[in-house]
Structure formats: structure tokens, C-alpha cells
Length: 137
Image 1: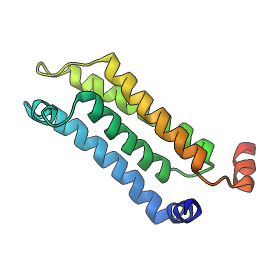
Image 2: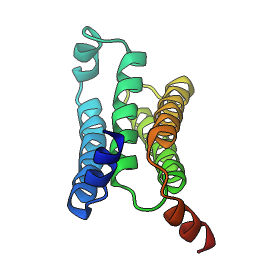
Image 3: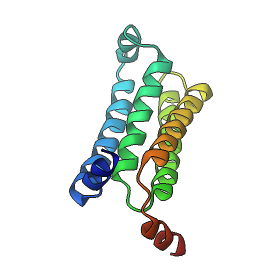
Image 4: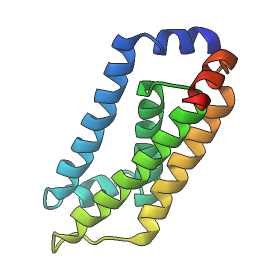
């Protein structure tokens, strides 16, 4: 099953779709969080911790599946993008008087990205030839 998923996600069309979906979800988070009162309404359904963990885990999954290269390269790239996205999200929140930036939220984003990319790195089939060729370049 893992091999089938990896083969499917190695198709350039699906990788492109996964990358686009990650950035669309991120844009939706930024825009949705900027609407006055929207965060408070969503907060009635789930806590901020749950929202951050879920959202950034899904984004990390999509980024990982959309990246090219070895599983190590995919994990590093995905985690670094999650770190940057979480930081920008908190910076945008600090611009609005009805929102507030939180370092704790950013750490939750980082942990969600780290956990998700680590799990994907562990279960993603290792292509020994691909691993060697990307480490040489």
C-alpha cells in the first residue's frame, strides 16, 4: 500500500496538485483568520491547539507529497516551509487588533510539521538509488 501511494504521488500531476492544495489551504487559513469574528466562531468548534495541529499537519502532508527528491529532502523542505508559513501566519495575525500573534502557536505549528514529516519520512519507501543520487548533487 505504501509503495502504491508513493508511486501515485511520484506522478508529476499529483505532486503539482498536492503542492497547489497545500498553498491554497494556507491561503484559506490566512484569509479566513483575517475576517473579523471568524476565528471566534471556529473556536467554538475546536480549540486553537487542535486547529493549528490539524491544519499544519495536513499542509505538511501535502507539501511532502508535492515535493520532489528523496524522502529526506521532502521532509526537510516540507518542515522548513511549515516553519516559514507558521511564522508568516503569526505575523499576519499581529497586524489585526482583534487577533494576536503567539509564539506558542508557532511552536505548535513547528511540532505538527516535525511530527508529520518525520512519520512520512519513516514510512515513505526509500529509493536507494534516488537517495544516493540526490545526496551526491
